[in-house]
Image 1 (cartoon, rainbow, N blue to C red):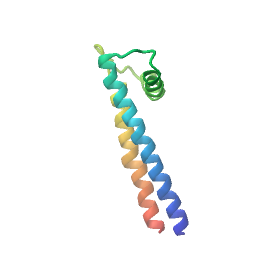
Image 2: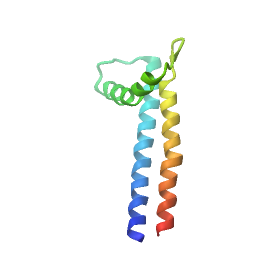
Image 3: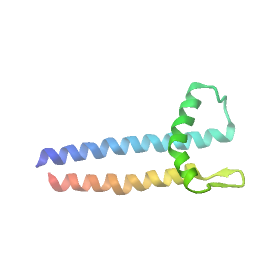
Length: 99
C-alpha cells in the first residue's frame, strides 16, 4: 500500500508545483498589464496566452470588469489557491494515510 501512497504524494507535489507556476504566471501577467510592454515580445505573448487560457472561461461565466479593472486574474488566483489548499492538501493527507 505504501507504493500507492508514494504515488499519490508525488502526484500531489507535481500538481502543487504546476498550480504555483500558473499562479505566478497570472500574477506576472497582471502586473505587466499595468506597464504594457511590447505585446509582440515572445515572453509577453506566452504569458498572455497562458493567462487568457485560464481567465477567459471566468470572463465568459460572468462579467469581471469593473470600471477599467479586470478582476478575472484575481478570481483565477483565488481558485488556484483553493485548489492548492483543498485538492493538493487532500491528496497529501490521503498519501500519508496510505503509507
